[in-house]
Length: 541
Image (cartoon, rainbow, N blue to C red):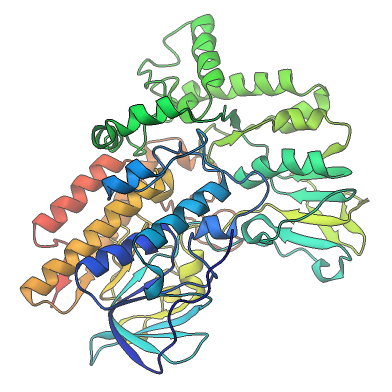
Protein backbone atom coordinates (compact mmCIF):
# COMPACT_ATOMS: atom_id res chain seq x y z
CA UNK A 1 0.00 0.00 0.00
CA UNK A 2 1.58 3.24 -1.09
CA UNK A 3 2.31 5.93 1.45
CA UNK A 4 1.40 9.47 0.55
CA UNK A 5 3.84 12.34 0.76
CA UNK A 6 2.85 15.71 2.17
CA UNK A 7 0.11 17.32 0.14
CA UNK A 8 0.81 20.82 1.42
CA UNK A 9 3.94 22.92 1.67
CA UNK A 10 5.14 24.27 4.99
CA UNK A 11 4.51 28.01 5.15
CA UNK A 12 7.03 30.31 6.87
CA UNK A 13 4.39 31.42 9.38
CA UNK A 14 0.71 30.59 9.37
CA UNK A 15 -2.30 31.37 11.50
CA UNK A 16 -5.04 28.77 11.80
CA UNK A 17 -8.32 28.51 13.56
CA UNK A 18 -7.45 24.97 14.57
CA UNK A 19 -4.44 22.67 14.51
CA UNK A 20 -5.06 18.93 14.74
CA UNK A 21 -2.26 16.60 15.80
CA UNK A 22 -2.55 13.17 14.21
CA UNK A 23 -4.14 11.80 11.03
CA UNK A 24 -5.63 8.56 12.30
CA UNK A 25 -9.37 8.00 12.46
CA UNK A 26 -9.78 10.80 15.03
CA UNK A 27 -7.73 13.34 13.07
CA UNK A 28 -9.43 12.56 9.77
CA UNK A 29 -12.93 13.02 11.12
CA UNK A 30 -11.94 16.11 13.15
CA UNK A 31 -10.56 17.63 9.96
CA UNK A 32 -13.78 16.83 8.09
CA UNK A 33 -15.95 18.42 10.80
CA UNK A 34 -13.65 21.46 11.10
CA UNK A 35 -13.95 22.12 7.39
CA UNK A 36 -17.72 21.92 7.73
CA UNK A 37 -17.52 24.74 10.29
CA UNK A 38 -15.56 26.86 7.84
CA UNK A 39 -12.40 26.75 9.95
CA UNK A 40 -8.93 27.26 8.57
CA UNK A 41 -7.24 24.07 9.75
CA UNK A 42 -3.95 22.21 9.51
CA UNK A 43 -3.24 18.60 10.50
CA UNK A 44 0.27 17.53 11.47
CA UNK A 45 1.06 13.82 11.11
CA UNK A 46 4.41 12.22 11.92
CA UNK A 47 3.83 9.33 9.50
CA UNK A 48 3.99 9.44 5.73
CA UNK A 49 0.33 8.47 5.41
CA UNK A 50 -3.01 8.43 7.19
CA UNK A 51 -4.29 5.67 9.44
CA UNK A 52 -2.70 6.28 12.85
CA UNK A 53 -2.17 3.03 14.73
CA UNK A 54 -3.09 1.08 11.57
CA UNK A 55 -0.35 2.88 9.66
CA UNK A 56 2.34 1.79 12.11
CA UNK A 57 1.15 -1.63 13.35
CA UNK A 58 1.90 -3.82 10.32
CA UNK A 59 3.17 -6.84 12.20
CA UNK A 60 2.06 -10.30 11.04
CA UNK A 61 -1.52 -11.02 12.08
CA UNK A 62 -2.40 -7.44 13.06
CA UNK A 63 -6.19 -7.36 13.23
CA UNK A 64 -9.00 -5.44 14.91
CA UNK A 65 -10.89 -7.14 17.75
CA UNK A 66 -14.16 -5.30 17.01
CA UNK A 67 -16.19 -6.69 14.10
CA UNK A 68 -15.73 -4.95 10.76
CA UNK A 69 -19.32 -3.81 10.28
CA UNK A 70 -19.02 -1.86 13.54
CA UNK A 71 -15.38 -0.72 13.42
CA UNK A 72 -16.01 1.96 10.82
CA UNK A 73 -17.36 5.50 10.52
CA UNK A 74 -21.08 6.14 10.68
CA UNK A 75 -21.13 9.90 9.99
CA UNK A 76 -21.77 9.45 6.24
CA UNK A 77 -24.41 6.99 5.04
CA UNK A 78 -23.03 6.81 1.49
CA UNK A 79 -19.61 5.86 2.89
CA UNK A 80 -21.21 3.14 5.01
CA UNK A 81 -23.02 1.70 2.03
CA UNK A 82 -20.19 1.78 -0.51
CA UNK A 83 -17.38 0.16 1.50
CA UNK A 84 -17.20 -3.65 1.45
CA UNK A 85 -15.46 -5.59 4.22
CA UNK A 86 -14.00 -9.01 3.46
CA UNK A 87 -13.76 -10.57 6.95
CA UNK A 88 -15.61 -10.71 10.25
CA UNK A 89 -12.58 -9.05 11.88
CA UNK A 90 -10.64 -6.81 9.50
CA UNK A 91 -6.90 -7.15 9.17
CA UNK A 92 -4.52 -4.19 9.24
CA UNK A 93 -4.08 -3.89 5.44
CA UNK A 94 -7.83 -3.65 4.91
CA UNK A 95 -8.33 -1.11 7.70
CA UNK A 96 -5.50 1.00 6.31
CA UNK A 97 -7.08 0.81 2.84
CA UNK A 98 -10.31 2.05 4.39
CA UNK A 99 -8.55 5.00 6.06
CA UNK A 100 -6.95 5.93 2.74
CA UNK A 101 -10.32 5.62 1.00
CA UNK A 102 -11.85 8.05 3.51
CA UNK A 103 -8.98 10.52 3.07
CA UNK A 104 -9.41 10.41 -0.71
CA UNK A 105 -13.20 10.42 -0.72
CA UNK A 106 -13.38 13.62 1.34
CA UNK A 107 -10.24 15.17 -0.18
CA UNK A 108 -8.59 15.48 3.21
CA UNK A 109 -4.91 15.23 2.28
CA UNK A 110 -4.56 18.82 1.12
CA UNK A 111 -4.84 20.01 4.74
CA UNK A 112 -2.51 17.35 6.20
CA UNK A 113 1.21 17.93 6.55
CA UNK A 114 2.81 14.47 6.68
CA UNK A 115 6.20 13.45 8.04
CA UNK A 116 6.01 16.26 10.56
CA UNK A 117 6.42 15.79 14.30
CA UNK A 118 4.92 18.32 16.70
CA UNK A 119 7.56 19.15 19.28
CA UNK A 120 6.01 21.94 21.33
CA UNK A 121 2.58 23.47 21.93
CA UNK A 122 2.66 26.64 24.03
CA UNK A 123 -0.24 28.88 25.08
CA UNK A 124 0.22 32.65 24.77
CA UNK A 125 -1.95 34.36 27.39
CA UNK A 126 -1.76 37.76 25.69
CA UNK A 127 -3.06 36.60 22.33
CA UNK A 128 -5.07 33.68 23.74
CA UNK A 129 -3.63 31.49 21.00
CA UNK A 130 -1.41 28.44 20.82
CA UNK A 131 2.03 28.45 19.24
CA UNK A 132 2.89 25.11 17.66
CA UNK A 133 6.45 24.18 16.67
CA UNK A 134 7.37 21.12 14.63
CA UNK A 135 10.59 19.44 13.57
CA UNK A 136 10.15 21.22 10.24
CA UNK A 137 10.58 24.66 11.87
CA UNK A 138 8.33 27.58 10.92
CA UNK A 139 5.95 27.72 13.90
CA UNK A 140 2.24 28.17 13.39
CA UNK A 141 -0.44 29.54 15.68
CA UNK A 142 -4.00 28.46 16.29
CA UNK A 143 -6.93 29.37 18.48
CA UNK A 144 -7.69 25.69 19.09
CA UNK A 145 -5.45 22.64 19.32
CA UNK A 146 -7.07 19.22 19.09
CA UNK A 147 -4.96 16.25 20.12
CA UNK A 148 -5.92 13.30 17.90
CA UNK A 149 -2.78 11.43 18.88
CA UNK A 150 -4.42 8.09 19.65
CA UNK A 151 -4.48 5.95 22.78
CA UNK A 152 -2.05 3.32 21.48
CA UNK A 153 0.53 5.28 19.53
CA UNK A 154 3.60 5.63 21.77
CA UNK A 155 5.51 2.34 21.72
CA UNK A 156 6.89 0.87 24.92
CA UNK A 157 10.44 -0.38 24.41
CA UNK A 158 11.84 -1.95 27.61
CA UNK A 159 15.25 -0.82 28.79
CA UNK A 160 17.20 -4.08 28.67
CA UNK A 161 21.01 -3.99 28.94
CA UNK A 162 22.90 -4.84 25.76
CA UNK A 163 20.32 -3.76 23.19
CA UNK A 164 23.03 -2.09 21.15
CA UNK A 165 25.19 -5.22 21.16
CA UNK A 166 22.79 -7.56 19.35
CA UNK A 167 24.11 -8.58 15.94
CA UNK A 168 20.70 -9.47 14.51
CA UNK A 169 17.58 -7.46 13.74
CA UNK A 170 15.36 -5.89 16.40
CA UNK A 171 11.73 -4.96 15.67
CA UNK A 172 8.79 -3.60 17.66
CA UNK A 173 5.29 -4.66 16.64
CA UNK A 174 4.15 -1.03 16.90
CA UNK A 175 6.82 0.22 14.45
CA UNK A 176 6.91 -2.60 11.95
CA UNK A 177 8.92 -2.13 8.73
CA UNK A 178 6.55 -1.22 5.91
CA UNK A 179 8.21 -3.67 3.57
CA UNK A 180 7.61 -6.53 5.99
CA UNK A 181 10.14 -8.86 7.64
CA UNK A 182 11.34 -12.21 6.30
CA UNK A 183 11.93 -14.74 9.07
CA UNK A 184 12.69 -17.69 6.80
CA UNK A 185 15.43 -19.84 8.29
CA UNK A 186 15.89 -17.57 11.31
CA UNK A 187 15.85 -18.15 15.03
CA UNK A 188 13.42 -15.57 16.41
CA UNK A 189 12.69 -14.42 19.94
CA UNK A 190 9.42 -12.68 20.79
CA UNK A 191 9.21 -10.71 24.04
CA UNK A 192 5.64 -10.04 25.15
CA UNK A 193 2.36 -11.93 24.99
CA UNK A 194 -0.30 -9.21 24.95
CA UNK A 195 -2.66 -8.68 22.02
CA UNK A 196 0.05 -7.96 19.45
CA UNK A 197 2.20 -10.90 20.56
CA UNK A 198 -0.75 -13.29 20.56
CA UNK A 199 -1.64 -12.21 17.02
CA UNK A 200 1.93 -12.30 15.67
CA UNK A 201 3.35 -15.42 17.33
CA UNK A 202 1.41 -18.05 15.30
CA UNK A 203 2.47 -16.49 11.99
CA UNK A 204 6.09 -15.94 13.00
CA UNK A 205 6.21 -19.58 14.15
CA UNK A 206 5.06 -20.76 10.72
CA UNK A 207 7.82 -18.87 8.96
CA UNK A 208 10.81 -19.04 11.28
CA UNK A 209 13.22 -21.94 11.74
CA UNK A 210 12.74 -21.67 15.50
CA UNK A 211 10.72 -19.37 17.75
CA UNK A 212 11.35 -18.71 21.43
CA UNK A 213 8.55 -16.84 23.25
CA UNK A 214 9.56 -14.95 26.40
CA UNK A 215 6.45 -14.63 28.59
CA UNK A 216 6.22 -12.51 31.72
CA UNK A 217 2.44 -12.72 32.18
CA UNK A 218 0.22 -15.50 30.88
CA UNK A 219 -2.85 -14.10 29.11
CA UNK A 220 -6.47 -15.06 28.70
CA UNK A 221 -7.23 -15.48 25.01
CA UNK A 222 -10.53 -16.43 23.40
CA UNK A 223 -10.79 -17.73 19.81
CA UNK A 224 -11.65 -14.94 17.39
CA UNK A 225 -13.41 -17.39 15.07
CA UNK A 226 -12.59 -15.07 12.20
CA UNK A 227 -14.04 -15.93 8.79
CA UNK A 228 -14.96 -14.34 5.47
CA UNK A 229 -17.87 -11.90 5.69
CA UNK A 230 -20.59 -13.00 3.31
CA UNK A 231 -22.28 -10.57 0.93
CA UNK A 232 -25.74 -11.44 2.27
CA UNK A 233 -24.64 -10.89 5.88
CA UNK A 234 -23.15 -7.53 4.95
CA UNK A 235 -26.25 -6.51 2.99
CA UNK A 236 -28.50 -7.35 5.95
CA UNK A 237 -26.59 -4.96 8.20
CA UNK A 238 -26.45 -2.22 5.57
CA UNK A 239 -30.23 -2.43 5.08
CA UNK A 240 -30.70 -1.26 8.68
CA UNK A 241 -27.41 0.50 9.41
CA UNK A 242 -28.90 3.53 11.27
CA UNK A 243 -30.91 1.28 13.60
CA UNK A 244 -27.95 -1.07 13.99
CA UNK A 245 -25.66 1.80 15.01
CA UNK A 246 -28.20 3.31 17.38
CA UNK A 247 -28.65 0.00 19.17
CA UNK A 248 -24.89 -0.55 19.44
CA UNK A 249 -24.39 2.85 21.08
CA UNK A 250 -26.59 1.72 23.98
CA UNK A 251 -24.16 -1.03 25.01
CA UNK A 252 -21.51 -0.29 27.69
CA UNK A 253 -18.68 -0.82 25.17
CA UNK A 254 -20.52 0.84 22.26
CA UNK A 255 -20.59 -2.36 20.22
CA UNK A 256 -22.91 -5.35 20.10
CA UNK A 257 -22.02 -9.02 20.16
CA UNK A 258 -23.51 -12.01 18.40
CA UNK A 259 -24.84 -13.57 21.60
CA UNK A 260 -26.77 -11.39 24.06
CA UNK A 261 -25.69 -10.74 27.62
CA UNK A 262 -26.71 -13.53 29.95
CA UNK A 263 -27.81 -11.56 33.02
CA UNK A 264 -27.79 -14.67 35.23
CA UNK A 265 -25.09 -14.92 37.88
CA UNK A 266 -22.40 -17.49 37.19
CA UNK A 267 -22.89 -18.60 40.79
CA UNK A 268 -26.63 -19.27 40.43
CA UNK A 269 -26.32 -22.21 38.02
CA UNK A 270 -24.82 -25.67 38.39
CA UNK A 271 -21.46 -26.66 36.93
CA UNK A 272 -22.92 -28.34 33.85
CA UNK A 273 -25.10 -25.40 32.85
CA UNK A 274 -22.26 -22.98 33.46
CA UNK A 275 -19.87 -24.99 31.29
CA UNK A 276 -22.46 -25.28 28.50
CA UNK A 277 -22.78 -21.50 28.42
CA UNK A 278 -19.03 -20.97 28.37
CA UNK A 279 -18.60 -23.63 25.68
CA UNK A 280 -21.22 -22.06 23.40
CA UNK A 281 -19.58 -18.67 23.64
CA UNK A 282 -16.07 -20.11 23.22
CA UNK A 283 -17.23 -21.66 19.95
CA UNK A 284 -18.93 -18.44 18.80
CA UNK A 285 -15.67 -16.59 19.38
CA UNK A 286 -14.93 -12.99 20.23
CA UNK A 287 -15.76 -10.86 23.24
CA UNK A 288 -19.15 -12.53 23.60
CA UNK A 289 -17.38 -14.80 26.11
CA UNK A 290 -17.33 -11.82 28.50
CA UNK A 291 -21.12 -11.79 28.38
CA UNK A 292 -21.49 -15.42 29.47
CA UNK A 293 -22.89 -14.25 32.81
CA UNK A 294 -23.88 -10.86 34.13
CA UNK A 295 -21.49 -10.71 37.05
CA UNK A 296 -18.15 -11.74 35.49
CA UNK A 297 -16.94 -8.15 35.56
CA UNK A 298 -18.27 -7.42 39.03
CA UNK A 299 -17.77 -10.43 41.27
CA UNK A 300 -14.41 -12.13 41.77
CA UNK A 301 -15.95 -15.50 42.66
CA UNK A 302 -18.09 -15.47 39.52
CA UNK A 303 -15.11 -14.34 37.49
CA UNK A 304 -13.04 -17.25 38.83
CA UNK A 305 -15.37 -19.74 37.14
CA UNK A 306 -14.67 -18.16 33.74
CA UNK A 307 -10.94 -18.16 34.40
CA UNK A 308 -10.98 -21.85 35.30
CA UNK A 309 -12.90 -22.68 32.12
CA UNK A 310 -10.28 -20.95 29.97
CA UNK A 311 -7.45 -22.67 31.83
CA UNK A 312 -9.17 -25.97 31.14
CA UNK A 313 -9.25 -25.12 27.43
CA UNK A 314 -5.54 -24.28 27.46
CA UNK A 315 -4.76 -27.64 29.05
CA UNK A 316 -6.79 -29.36 26.31
CA UNK A 317 -5.16 -27.43 23.47
CA UNK A 318 -1.50 -27.60 24.59
CA UNK A 319 -0.13 -31.14 24.60
CA UNK A 320 2.85 -30.63 26.90
CA UNK A 321 1.48 -30.30 30.48
CA UNK A 322 4.39 -28.17 31.70
CA UNK A 323 4.00 -25.69 28.84
CA UNK A 324 0.23 -25.64 29.31
CA UNK A 325 0.61 -24.67 32.97
CA UNK A 326 2.99 -21.85 32.06
CA UNK A 327 0.36 -20.55 29.63
CA UNK A 328 -2.44 -20.66 32.22
CA UNK A 329 -3.09 -17.18 33.62
CA UNK A 330 -3.67 -16.76 37.35
CA UNK A 331 -5.03 -13.22 37.12
CA UNK A 332 -8.64 -12.06 37.05
CA UNK A 333 -10.19 -12.57 33.61
CA UNK A 334 -10.77 -9.18 32.03
CA UNK A 335 -8.73 -7.00 34.37
CA UNK A 336 -6.22 -6.95 31.53
CA UNK A 337 -7.59 -6.57 28.02
CA UNK A 338 -9.05 -9.88 26.89
CA UNK A 339 -7.23 -11.12 23.79
CA UNK A 340 -8.76 -12.72 20.70
CA UNK A 341 -6.56 -15.31 19.03
CA UNK A 342 -6.26 -17.51 15.99
CA UNK A 343 -4.35 -20.68 16.88
CA UNK A 344 -2.24 -19.07 19.60
CA UNK A 345 -2.22 -21.88 22.17
CA UNK A 346 -1.94 -24.56 19.47
CA UNK A 347 1.25 -22.88 18.26
CA UNK A 348 3.06 -24.22 21.32
CA UNK A 349 2.51 -27.77 20.02
CA UNK A 350 4.87 -27.03 17.13
CA UNK A 351 8.33 -28.64 17.44
CA UNK A 352 10.01 -25.34 16.53
CA UNK A 353 8.42 -23.30 19.34
CA UNK A 354 9.62 -22.95 22.95
CA UNK A 355 8.17 -20.97 25.84
CA UNK A 356 10.42 -19.29 28.40
CA UNK A 357 8.82 -18.05 31.62
CA UNK A 358 10.38 -14.75 32.72
CA UNK A 359 7.81 -13.94 35.42
CA UNK A 360 10.23 -14.70 38.23
CA UNK A 361 13.54 -14.46 36.38
CA UNK A 362 13.60 -11.30 34.26
CA UNK A 363 15.74 -11.09 31.13
CA UNK A 364 19.27 -10.35 32.31
CA UNK A 365 20.67 -8.88 29.15
CA UNK A 366 20.73 -8.94 25.38
CA UNK A 367 23.99 -10.27 24.04
CA UNK A 368 25.61 -10.20 20.63
CA UNK A 369 24.05 -13.55 19.82
CA UNK A 370 20.69 -13.46 21.60
CA UNK A 371 18.97 -13.15 24.98
CA UNK A 372 20.37 -14.23 28.33
CA UNK A 373 18.06 -15.10 31.23
CA UNK A 374 18.21 -17.53 34.13
CA UNK A 375 21.83 -18.34 33.44
CA UNK A 376 21.17 -19.45 29.85
CA UNK A 377 21.75 -17.72 26.53
CA UNK A 378 19.16 -18.24 23.80
CA UNK A 379 20.79 -17.92 20.37
CA UNK A 380 18.73 -15.68 18.08
CA UNK A 381 18.91 -14.02 14.68
CA UNK A 382 16.02 -11.61 15.30
CA UNK A 383 14.18 -10.20 18.33
CA UNK A 384 10.61 -8.93 18.22
CA UNK A 385 9.34 -6.72 21.02
CA UNK A 386 5.59 -7.15 21.40
CA UNK A 387 5.65 -4.98 24.51
CA UNK A 388 2.77 -2.66 23.74
CA UNK A 389 2.39 1.04 24.33
CA UNK A 390 2.60 3.84 26.84
CA UNK A 391 -1.17 3.98 26.53
CA UNK A 392 -3.38 7.08 26.46
CA UNK A 393 -0.80 9.59 27.73
CA UNK A 394 2.56 8.61 26.23
CA UNK A 395 2.35 10.62 23.01
CA UNK A 396 0.93 13.68 24.76
CA UNK A 397 3.66 13.70 27.40
CA UNK A 398 6.35 13.29 24.75
CA UNK A 399 5.49 16.77 23.46
CA UNK A 400 6.39 20.00 25.26
CA UNK A 401 2.84 21.18 26.01
CA UNK A 402 2.60 24.33 28.17
CA UNK A 403 -0.56 26.08 29.28
CA UNK A 404 -1.19 29.09 31.50
CA UNK A 405 1.78 30.43 33.48
CA UNK A 406 4.06 28.07 31.59
CA UNK A 407 2.55 25.01 33.30
CA UNK A 408 3.76 21.89 31.50
CA UNK A 409 1.51 18.92 30.96
CA UNK A 410 4.21 16.77 32.57
CA UNK A 411 3.91 18.86 35.75
CA UNK A 412 0.13 18.90 35.58
CA UNK A 413 -0.02 15.12 35.32
CA UNK A 414 2.85 14.32 37.68
CA UNK A 415 0.41 12.63 40.08
CA UNK A 416 -1.44 10.92 37.25
CA UNK A 417 -3.47 12.12 34.27
CA UNK A 418 -6.48 14.26 35.13
CA UNK A 419 -9.05 15.65 32.71
CA UNK A 420 -12.66 16.72 32.65
CA UNK A 421 -14.64 14.26 30.53
CA UNK A 422 -11.39 13.20 28.84
CA UNK A 423 -11.82 16.35 26.74
CA UNK A 424 -10.38 19.32 28.60
CA UNK A 425 -7.54 19.96 31.06
CA UNK A 426 -7.53 22.84 33.61
CA UNK A 427 -4.80 25.34 32.78
CA UNK A 428 -4.84 24.46 29.08
CA UNK A 429 -7.50 26.61 27.38
CA UNK A 430 -8.81 25.60 23.93
CA UNK A 431 -6.85 22.36 24.06
CA UNK A 432 -9.03 19.32 23.43
CA UNK A 433 -8.03 15.67 23.72
CA UNK A 434 -9.90 13.08 21.67
CA UNK A 435 -10.31 9.82 23.63
CA UNK A 436 -8.21 11.24 26.43
CA UNK A 437 -7.82 9.71 29.89
CA UNK A 438 -11.12 9.92 31.72
CA UNK A 439 -13.19 8.98 28.67
CA UNK A 440 -14.45 5.49 27.67
CA UNK A 441 -11.94 5.31 24.76
CA UNK A 442 -10.07 1.97 24.87
CA UNK A 443 -12.92 0.20 26.64
CA UNK A 444 -15.22 0.83 23.67
CA UNK A 445 -15.44 0.56 19.92
CA UNK A 446 -12.84 3.30 19.38
CA UNK A 447 -14.39 4.75 16.23
CA UNK A 448 -17.73 5.26 17.96
CA UNK A 449 -16.00 7.03 20.85
CA UNK A 450 -13.94 9.08 18.40
CA UNK A 451 -17.00 10.27 16.51
CA UNK A 452 -18.78 11.22 19.74
CA UNK A 453 -15.77 13.25 20.90
CA UNK A 454 -15.23 14.95 17.54
CA UNK A 455 -18.90 15.91 17.28
CA UNK A 456 -18.86 17.32 20.82
CA UNK A 457 -15.72 19.37 20.13
CA UNK A 458 -17.03 20.65 16.80
CA UNK A 459 -20.37 21.63 18.36
CA UNK A 460 -18.51 23.35 21.20
CA UNK A 461 -16.36 25.41 18.82
CA UNK A 462 -19.48 26.35 16.84
CA UNK A 463 -21.32 27.41 20.01
CA UNK A 464 -18.34 29.49 21.14
CA UNK A 465 -18.25 31.28 17.80
CA UNK A 466 -21.96 32.10 17.93
CA UNK A 467 -21.71 33.41 21.50
CA UNK A 468 -18.51 35.37 20.99
CA UNK A 469 -16.37 33.30 23.35
CA UNK A 470 -12.61 33.18 22.77
CA UNK A 471 -11.55 30.44 25.19
CA UNK A 472 -12.94 27.43 27.00
CA UNK A 473 -11.14 25.79 29.90
CA UNK A 474 -12.06 23.00 32.29
CA UNK A 475 -12.25 24.03 35.95
CA UNK A 476 -10.12 22.38 38.60
CA UNK A 477 -13.18 21.34 40.63
CA UNK A 478 -14.74 19.68 37.59
CA UNK A 479 -11.52 17.80 36.88
CA UNK A 480 -11.09 16.59 40.45
CA UNK A 481 -14.69 15.42 40.70
CA UNK A 482 -14.42 13.67 37.34
CA UNK A 483 -11.21 11.79 38.19
CA UNK A 484 -12.85 10.67 41.44
CA UNK A 485 -15.90 9.51 39.49
CA UNK A 486 -13.81 7.53 36.94
CA UNK A 487 -11.98 5.67 39.69
CA UNK A 488 -15.14 5.10 41.75
CA UNK A 489 -16.81 3.44 38.75
CA UNK A 490 -13.74 1.26 38.13
CA UNK A 491 -13.58 0.24 41.79
CA UNK A 492 -17.04 -1.31 41.51
CA UNK A 493 -15.62 -3.81 39.00
CA UNK A 494 -12.80 -6.34 38.70
CA UNK A 495 -10.66 -4.01 36.54
CA UNK A 496 -8.36 -2.73 39.33
CA UNK A 497 -7.74 -6.32 40.49
CA UNK A 498 -4.43 -6.55 38.60
CA UNK A 499 -1.75 -4.33 37.14
CA UNK A 500 -2.58 -3.45 33.54
CA UNK A 501 -1.88 -0.79 30.95
CA UNK A 502 -5.30 0.68 31.86
CA UNK A 503 -3.49 1.78 35.03
CA UNK A 504 -0.19 2.55 33.29
CA UNK A 505 1.38 -0.39 35.13
CA UNK A 506 3.38 -1.51 32.09
CA UNK A 507 5.48 1.67 32.18
CA UNK A 508 8.16 1.88 34.92
CA UNK A 509 7.64 4.96 37.09
CA UNK A 510 4.23 5.86 35.67
CA UNK A 511 1.72 6.91 38.33
CA UNK A 512 -1.04 4.34 38.79
CA UNK A 513 -4.39 5.88 37.88
CA UNK A 514 -7.22 4.00 36.19
CA UNK A 515 -7.44 6.00 32.97
CA UNK A 516 -10.50 4.93 30.94
CA UNK A 517 -14.11 5.37 32.10
CA UNK A 518 -16.39 2.35 32.15
CA UNK A 519 -19.78 2.81 30.47
CA UNK A 520 -20.38 4.56 27.15
CA UNK A 521 -24.11 5.50 27.36
CA UNK A 522 -23.96 7.35 30.72
CA UNK A 523 -20.82 9.11 29.52
CA UNK A 524 -22.60 10.40 26.41
CA UNK A 525 -25.50 11.55 28.56
CA UNK A 526 -23.08 13.47 30.79
CA UNK A 527 -21.37 15.15 27.81
CA UNK A 528 -24.72 16.17 26.35
CA UNK A 529 -25.85 17.49 29.72
CA UNK A 530 -22.68 19.55 30.11
CA UNK A 531 -23.21 21.15 26.69
CA UNK A 532 -26.93 21.77 27.29
CA UNK A 533 -26.10 23.56 30.55
CA UNK A 534 -23.81 26.07 28.84
CA UNK A 535 -20.70 23.89 29.15
CA UNK A 536 -21.02 23.37 32.86
CA UNK A 537 -17.65 22.62 34.44
CA UNK A 538 -15.85 24.80 31.92
CA UNK A 539 -14.97 28.48 32.08
CA UNK A 540 -15.71 30.46 28.91
CA UNK A 541 -14.27 33.93 28.28
